[in-house]
Length: 397
Image (cartoon, rainbow, N blue to C red; front, side, top):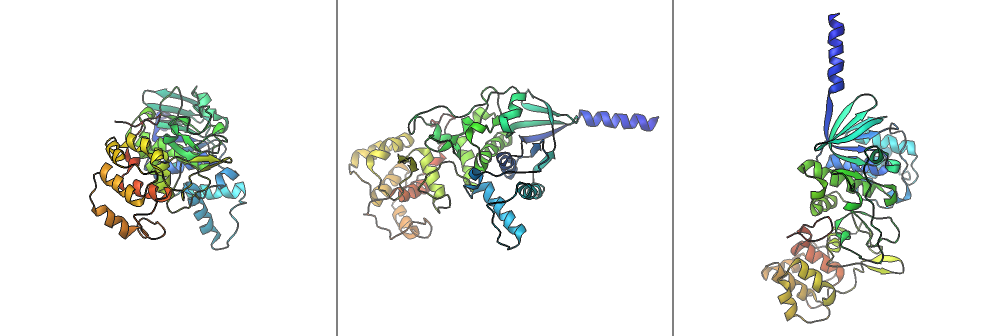
């Protein structure tokens, strides 16, 4: 009888115990896997729950389009498992892909996986999301990411999915500044996913990777990074630091804007992404292609307004400089004026032009500067990307 009572007490204590985690991701879709892996890599305790047991992972052409971020790490694991057999990674069977992810997720610090986890109830209780599974297990999470097909968890939680705002034209608003992933949605320019498209409209700390976003692994990685930020710093999603989130994505080799003329493997992709997302240099739509035009020269008219937005004192510099196109010398002068740098910058740039700055050709201060060179110099020495913005893309004071 005593054993029976003790056993019953143990069962009761186990059933009432709720596992605590920072982020819980639902759905072992490619986007869900990327979200969970990135959240864990960002230093947050993460649980991935999949109701199907992670038996198959079907990668789409959209997932395979960008060999960067989590997908690039996945390919490295596949190559190591093939042990130099040099087999094609483009036609991996869903079952084999799932096996690779199973082995990988089992080794990732901060990440645990619940296979065949069916959700009975999910609701907000104070600052936490409380989840009850059909097997009586309970989980408390700071942040939820729904990566299931048809947003099943959001429906259960009665959460309203955000999604992309309907817009027309190129740069219709400043939301592109908040992008956390390359967009595959046709006709949406710049080609990025604003973080607000992932945030639930009627609940804090609930992110939804909706089918309407044409989600790929980069979108999942963006969602996982945003979720990890909120969980790590204990802030509501409405207070998300967009630039810190984007900076984390750059650190983990992801990208958040797509230019058809800039390969994702470009050595200066990081600087181009950061300057483009500030709006200081904007892309252009030509023949249904969104282009950065990185070999074109930079005009005074295109940078005057955005530079003045970031550095108000630069308006004095623009009053004294009237040339139509900027030279390398002009840009160094602008950086020194707006960034309070001394003349030592000239020598520093000259010495590092090829090696440190990874710019081609010979340093020539009198030549007209290209958009590629401008992005690199302004990113490294003026650092507009470090200025924080709100969720609408407006600069914070």
